Image 1: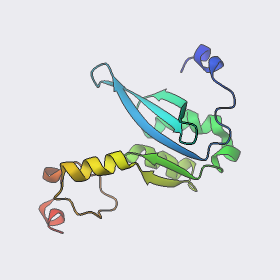
Image 2: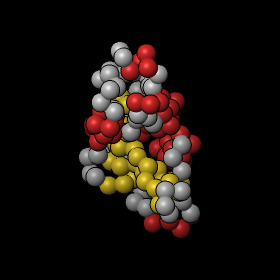
Image 3: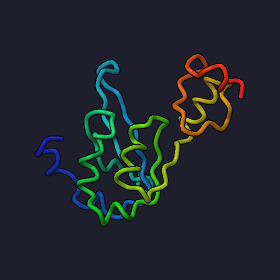
Image 4: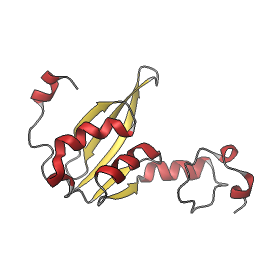
Length: 135
């Protein structure tokens, strides 16, 4: 985010941030990504950065500071490991919640996957070893 864009942001946008959502969007034919953080209580986007990695949230946590980070109760996100990693490292007290859209999408696309598979990135039936699919 460039300096002129930062100056136009509401300086209070990060106050009272308790439940938030994190997701990425793609642009330019899915070759470039933006990570967006939304305040679930207001529905407003409070942060955006290029990329879709854990590092794309570094500036967000820097802007928040320790006092506001401690107030985050929960963050919704997709099944990818990057955002969860960032929250485990920077906001360990926040509850990480998988957003319903992605959970339903994975179960619909790959019904052969057991309902409870903790710690696995679910990419589809062919990417999961046969012994796990049979569980």
